[in-house]
Every structure is written in structure tokens, then in C-alpha cells.
Image: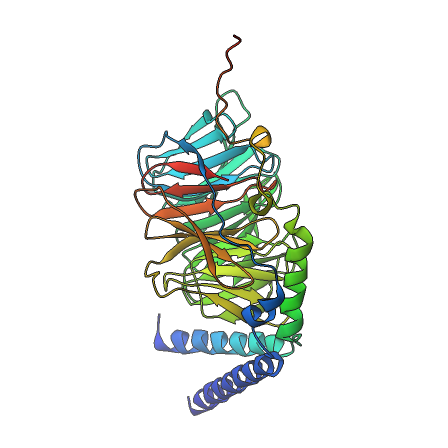
Length: 72
Length: 339
């Protein structure tokens, strides 16, 4: 790449970067405390349906190896 | 020349100013972090999961695995040059897909269960129909100029890829052509995760940035700094977690535009290779180079358990849609199922 092409492509990149940063700078964030409490609330609401937290009864465990039964 | 230099200087100055502005805005809403807020959350206690199955079949390092949406089938990829589709309830192998290139880095299951996709150092994403009598290559998506690090189906007709060429790409599987190319990263893209609403996705790259993209417009909406390696969404779509070779994991909240907690432990000196969340988002399962998968309380930032049993690096982890367990895959060539 000639140096003129190089400088015009880094110019193009710099322009794109400015455009991107201008867009990102317009973002209005919410407070971290609110974001955290919303995430906590989600976890709380779904915890009771969470098999890895609540435990899985052996009879309902899909991954447990099923041993063959012997009829005595 | 002088005019060009003047413009470059002005652009650089504006970039610096904007970056400072963005950081100030983040500080402005930073009124605390997650672990302090989570003081009131109930403790999860010690999470002790048992090894239920060891899936033996691959002959070399496993690099990637992905659950089917039916929570029963699962596909794994190994550098032995094969994809294996497993029935995780019985431990049986359902399908073996031979790969043209053994250097596979990523595998994905389509939500329909009909297709799988894989790719790696061949720079391509190969899509196969596994419901045919014998696996049939449907498409070879060939346009990336770097390795394929990650792929995820939106449906049987669209797939998203991340590449070492620093771009992500949305492909039309009916034509085999690129629909949208996502450019903004300046380092190899290592991972991507789709939001549940399927309008956005996040990507992690070697430029230490994570980016949120609008899937349909192709634009980068937000950029988060500090991390790379693996990435995954929190179930409500408002946050995502990343794991890095700096041995830590982090959670970022989209709405406050910043990191809200770091998961680190002085005794953990191994890089994070992969991570996944439990269905409620409370637990993070992170695979490390120390051969273990450590379990973190996502809210309190504490280690609450460990899955030990692999004889080499844990390279991939995944929780099925029904949340009934965790699968870990390793360079030791085994996949293990725990719950």
C-alpha cells in the first residue's frame, strides 16, 4: 500500500471511530444500583424453578444412569 | 499534507474527548457494585453437583460443544476431525459427522435440531444436515479471511459467525452469501452470544473489548472494555458475562453501560476458557485451564463449587434449555454431565 493510500485509510478509520464514539457517547445509562437490583430480582424470581439450585429428585434425573431392575 | 495532519489531529482530539465523556457518564451512574447490592440476597450455600456421565468417543482434544434446544441432544467438536451428536440421556452417540478440516474451533446446533455448523482454522463455516440418512454438507460459508472462532444459528436459514479476521457476519443459508458484516473490532473476534430477543448479540475480541450489535442494522450500539475470550448473556438479556485468560470473569450490565462485578480469586491462577450461566442466572459455570469448572455465585461474586474430574483443560461448558445440568468438554477428549 502506498503511503498516500495508507494515510487515507487511517483517515477513514479515524473518521469512523469518531462517528462510532459520538453515537456511543449519546447513551444514557441507568444507575448501577438499579441495574444490580433488577438482576437480583430476576435471579430471585427464577430460583425456585432452577434445578441446579433446588436439586433434582433421583427419579426425575435425566442424566442419572438407570440401573436394570431385577424382578425377584 | 498539512491539512490532512490537521484533520487527523482534530479527529484524535475528538476521540479522546468522547472517550473521556463516556467514562465520566459511566462514573456518574456508578453508585455501587453488584456484590454490595447482593448483600441482601439469600445465600446459595455450597453447590455440589455430581458427575452423572462421562461421554467417551472423541480421540483428541474437544474444543467446543453446544446443546440442542430439546435439552437432550448435544453436539461436540474435536480435533480428531469429527463432530459427534450425543443422546445425553442414554450416553449414546447418534451421529458422527466427519470434517474436511480437523482444526475445528466451534460447533453449533440449529434450534430446529436439523442442522449443525462447525468451523475453525479452515476459515469456513460448514453447515450439515444431520437428519439425512447420512450427514450431508448443506453449505460451506467461505468469506472470512481468518479462523472461525464461534458460530450460532438464528434459524435453519440464518447463522452468525465470529472470526479471527476481526469481523462477525450474518449469513443467509439459502443463498450461502453474507447478509451483514459487523466491523468495528480491531482484534480477533473470539466469541459471540445471541440475545434471547434475537435483535442483538454481543461479541468478545482480542482487542479486549466486548461489543453489543444491532443484528438487523449491522451497527455497534455499545462497547465495553476490559475483557475477551468467552461471552454469554444473562437470561434476561440485560447483562452479559465474559471470561478471560487473565483468570477472571466479569459481568457487564447493558443498561448502566459498564462492568458491575468481577469474579476473581487469589487461588485461581488459570485462564478462563469458557463460561455459561444457569437458567436463573444465579450460577456461572466457568471452565479454566486448571482442568476444573468453577462455579460462581453471579450476584455475590463468591466461588460456591467446583466440578473436578477432567484430566486436562476444560475448553467448553453448556447448560441445556431445561436447566437440568451442566456439560463440560475438555482437552482430555471427554465430555462430562453434572447435576
